Image (cartoon, rainbow, N blue to C red; front, side, top):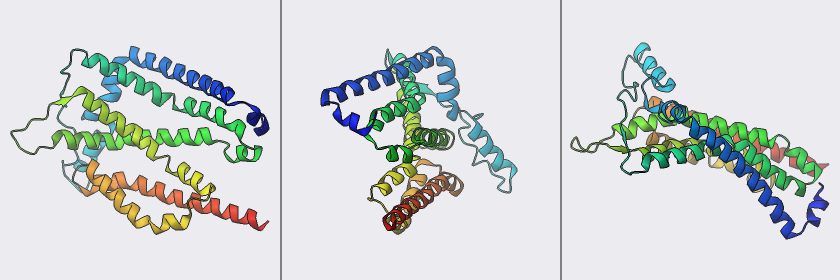
Amino acid sequence: MSKIDAQEMTFLDHLEELRWHIIRSAVVIVLIAIVAFIFKEFVFDVVILGPSRSDFFTNYWLCYLGENSFLHTSRLCINSNPIKLQSIQMAGQFLAHIKISLIGGLVLAFPYIFYEFWRFVSPALYIKERKIARGAVAAISLLFFIGLLFGYYIICPLSINFLYSYQVSDLAVNNIKLMSYISLVSSIGLGSGILFELPVIVLFFSKIGLLTPETLKKYRKHALVIILIISAIITPPDVFSQILVSLPLLVLYEISIAISKRIVKKDEQKEII
């Protein structure tokens, strides 16, 4: 459907079209959530509780690196003590089961959800605009899952180790609620996935003229400070862990500058022509 055809649709027609896109997205989310609900042992024991175990990929290799490199230290052996979770509500574990199943459905259905969104907005675009945005679904989905994996394999183990082992006094004992742990893991994973969409956001704002590479370069130092502060908060108190978290975020910021510069340059060339 062309842009003219889209404009000929009434407001109610657009609402009806949007309703079906939402329904199809919801159906996919629920179907995936049902599968996740059925395989609860794998979802909880392997995926959700994985970052808290000493044999988790990240935990194991950090410990190996610390003990077998020039560092010769066991400080990198994080999550060596098994975490103990508690459920203090009658339906606590059942509600946690439902919550994590829905989150899993939302995460795995993300590419399809964005595809439905793209199908809804694309008729309102010109053919030229569609060509520019070609591959948007794949690019956004790829960045989201890269960010999700980064949050899961890097930030989650470091955050769990720091928060679970942190004590203000020896008399205070950490008795972590199951729902609190799930909220931490899910928020870090989803937050990292959204954070890794930075190049796409910069691309969009550069395209409409609200962001320039000069602006990004001007505030590069401010961005560096913010990234280091975030890294210091969510990682154990050692320089290695902070650098490990900071580097990908800094790389993303530099990539965003390059993307903005390329977009602005193309627009300037078109104006000259």
